[in-house]
Image (tube, rainbow, N blue to C red; front, side, top):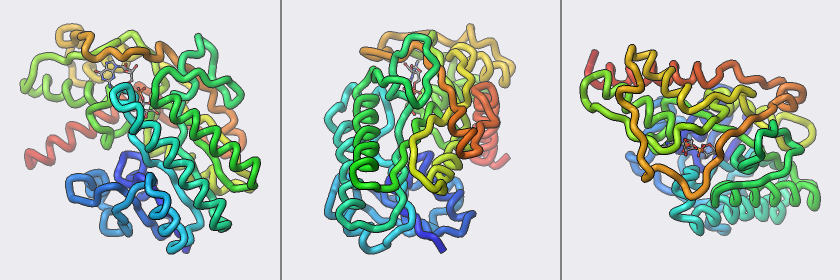
Length: 325
Ligand SMILES: C[C@H]1O[C@H](OP(=O)(O)OP(=O)(O)OC[C@H]2O[C@@H](n3cnc4c(=O)[nH]c(N)nc43)[C@H](O)[C@@H]2O)[C@@H](O)[C@@H](O)C1=O
């Protein structure tokens, strides 16, 4: 039986990855800052909390990280820790940098000093590319991050690459573009739209206030993306990969798809407010995930339009269950 340690197990990706690894008969050790009930919702929604060995700790504590890795001697480590909101990173740049960049360094130092034959996955981000002015991002495209979050992720990316080259550590970064699901918190735009539109459809509220709706993104389905993470660690040699659908749509298209699924005209309900604008934003981003298809045999099945529909359907189901329907 293989053992995996997941740092940041309680988030959307941590939950879907845990489920995948449990299906593959792994022993899953989950590390998260808080193991109180309120923080483990995602694991409860997937009904897997009882199958994960949970450790309350933080990737920010080098001694704890080392102790955990030394004790469990995992075959694979997944670094999904650190705050993931780009918007929040403008308000908390130091905490964002520490969580993402120092956390990754703690893991790399742990693996280097313990000299164990462990494989390490690092959660990178399509936000490392930032504003690349209409180029289609490949693994060769130069980073130009546009937020404290993007800068921290770019730094962690280079730390991983440097440790791989210098010490021969098996470490990979997945440059994941936006990936969504019913486990997404409403601080991210897709879930904010879906939850509010469903409330509008049920007469519980009357407007949806957003920031810049002119932006474009490559939105994929999160459960598919954790498969790519796992596949990276099953290769013979470590490498970095873009994980995306390859299809970019506008936020307006996403909003339209959500409201259409609910038989509503979005223009009657959506307004914008400068409160939700960022000091800088990525206007449009396009990604080429061909390397992941060629080398990992991974290809996204769902694009942003599917994601919109599936998130609405999940939200209606969750609401129905809560109402006992
Ligand atoms: C790849 C990357 O993907 C995600 O980062 P994100 O793209 O910033 O995600 P988001 O859902 O917060 O914003 C998407 C876009 O939507 C615009 N937008 C408009 N109006 C609102 C609004 O009201 N709220 C929010 N949150 N965004 C809004 C906002 O300005 C931005 O342009 C994370 O998973 C991150 O961890 C990651 O790695």
